[in-house]
Length: 396
Ligand code: TTP
Ligand code: MG
Image (cartoon, rainbow, N blue to C red):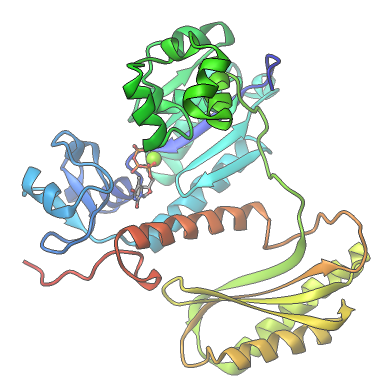
């Protein structure tokens, strides 16, 4: 961790993501303050807003009433998550054409390892420009890109100039880059840490770097002290990609239209079970646990699991268990958007590298996305069904 990295890591973060998708799709909103979130008059909050709206001091998570007070003339829109998901997937797919090592970390940001791509595309700044141009052309959205020798520097670089930023921080520039920053820019600095930072009168990362590890330990506790100590020196991981071993083999499918028809569900599940069975047998694995995954229209996601009497890998056996789980859960009254089946709990101790939904990059991205949306939903004070935006009381 402490040795200098010779990698180039890129961090891409979409600008005002939800609001930019709206401005893209609604030309009348371009150049105007746009606030995506709850409707004025309700008790919800701002999900995000365009940079034109930020000029009025509007920010994510601000009560919508406060946003409305600051800018009654803004366009107030309810989130349309499906369109944002689609844009997100387009962006991630595009990034995968640039580098084979892409790690989506939220709905609108990803890390790329671009080490060695210079020969293909030119200097790091040229690669960043290429990414920005492609996203602009193909997806119609703007983003900010940061490049550095590790994840921390890349992330701070993408935040450095927003919107439409492009910042490359060379290793010899790391200290001058970090020096004037407020410690709140560093990763994992929550309200508690910030309180101590303020109490100590620390205003810059440079001041933080001037403190010994022992001193930091005393004020922040070992764990946070270690993190601050390393970050103040620009030290961080340069690993991009999936972390952790893959632990299941699974397959899922999203329907073009929500499905209620039992026969359709049955044949889909049977096909998925066959694919999973095939992968299991190819990997020489049998699993103890079968998981059924269902997403209802509206992103409400359920999983049901059953432990088998003997580890299984047969198509029909897997299908039967998954179908039982589906029937027992009585989802049928509701339209189903996605269905998946997974097997885990290996009988053998071999490394598994065939996971198709639980840890595939696409699913990691999707799970992260849904966790973002679910936590947003909690913040908005609504159930998980509604994408977290309170129903507007009445259109004005
Ligand atoms: P961010 O990347 O934090 O914000 P942003 O893309 O809107 O703006 P920028 O990066 O230019 O500063 O979050 C990405 C999306 O996540 C955002 O468009 C909406 C959603 N989001 C919420 O729903 N609630 C929140 O509190 C935040 C911060 C984001
Ligand atoms: Mg963003």
